[in-house]
Image (cartoon, rainbow, N blue to C red; front, top):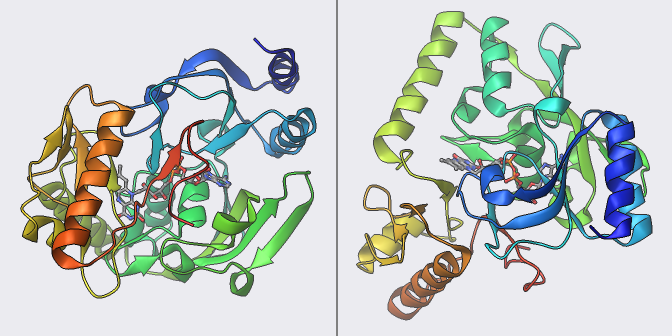
Length: 312
Ligand SMILES: Cc1cc2nc3c(=O)[nH]c(=O)nc-3n(C[C@H](O)[C@H](O)[C@H](O)COP(=O)(O)OP(=O)(O)OC[C@H]3O[C@@H](n4cnc5c(N)ncnc54)[C@H](O)[C@@H]3O)c2cc1C
């Protein structure tokens, strides 16, 4: 291991974080694609963010923040950098007020939904079934079934890459379709305050169950994926365009345009990064040629061979 990476590993262990050398990143993404990285650190509190990220900056070590890896496409050849996971070890939830909760960035959306249900709070149901963390959802302004993170977030505590912490109020968060100020600024989300409304338990549960059932019946949840592979283009739907172009079921190796929901590319077994990228390009080119629409990839692409994906 490179000596700078070794320093980060030692510091992380001093802070009580669990570390994994030679982690296989397919185990940390919902696409089940991704090669090795020299070091993976599970961040376990604000202090670990505040100490380790500035340290990686200072040492010039490339690094990535992962939540649940449910919106990521990671190179099968691996990446030369540190992966910091904001997950279970950074997932406290506290009640600020009767209808305001504050959560650390690593908590999953489904855990927040269940806690809201427990407290008879409504407004979070749309997010039940989005398989990401709060940090990833704020970063992306995740949304579904008419709801978006921007509807419920009232403030976010974040740090810049040198460790300066700031709290942003809702009007400073720059939310729009699958974007937030964080997709541009590179700041790291530490926690967020969520405002919900007093509701009725049975109604909240019924809505959550109904939306989950809708997902199960329409989405290929039985296969690994990153959800919708393409953003919704202005004036149409990616899945509709893909279907109209006859691309349902088209595959490159084990990467396949789902026959159940053509907006999803799925991994039918052993798809790798290059097969997935080839299929994404094929879909984009065909849709552009036949319909004139330009599709943009929604998941972020993490590869040493690319500067970054075409999202920003
Ligand atoms: C089956 C399936 C269904 C899905 N359905 C939906 C849906 O209905 N709606 C929707 O919007 N999305 C959906 N998604 C996509 C995905 O779940 C969301 O985008 C989710 O919000 C990503 O969260 P994550 O924790 O997995 O983030 P990751 O995929 O781990 O990361 C995504 C980005 O967020 C950044 N990030 C993560 N945590 C932080 C942090 N603390 N600070 C700064 N940056 C951070 C990462 O660096 C990365 O750039 C779906 C995915 C799957 C697999």
